[in-house]
Image (cartoon, rainbow, N blue to C red; front, side, top):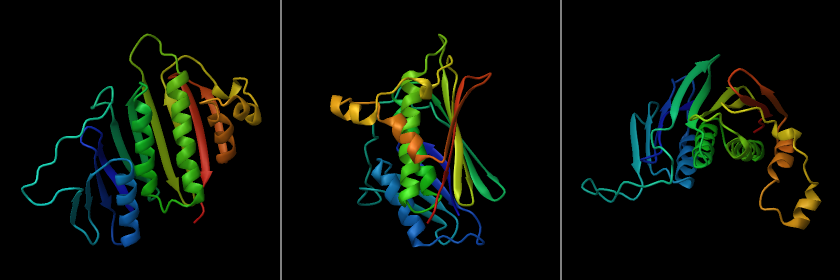
Length: 228
């Protein structure tokens, strides 16, 4: 089993750990994590444990004296992500807390991609879940109306057997995106709307998606069964 131990958006760096010999990880598991990280621009990776005790990769480095320039990202705050993880019944649970800012959609999407890569190969179901989480996060960031103070967005993911469930929580005024009157999908295509396909797609891709307003703000809960 591979878990993501840390993430740094300023450096585009992520650290992973293999947990125990009872959960062996083959070359395909390592390759999947590396490929996903590099596809979203994370070029500094570390993997600890298992067969590779101190495996590191800094893509583009040609030698020990080579120094790579520090990447720059269009993010509101490079220290805006708080990452936590734990094991629950032997399966990872991830919690990431982000600043409520339009640039955070990129961070939320990358965070989901990296954590989901530790679950298994990106087959049809896992790709659908990754897309749905991106659309949910984009809607939360776009429509959330804050109460005149710096808000947070919390992404929670639980891996359990053949399914993944979680929620997205904000600190904003009540807003249920699924109660907004939506054009039919053919009408949207006819009008060439640049956005708005997300909610139609989310409801088709997920096995469960529910909205509630609690003491903190708006919460969207979701669940997806993932088959090999």
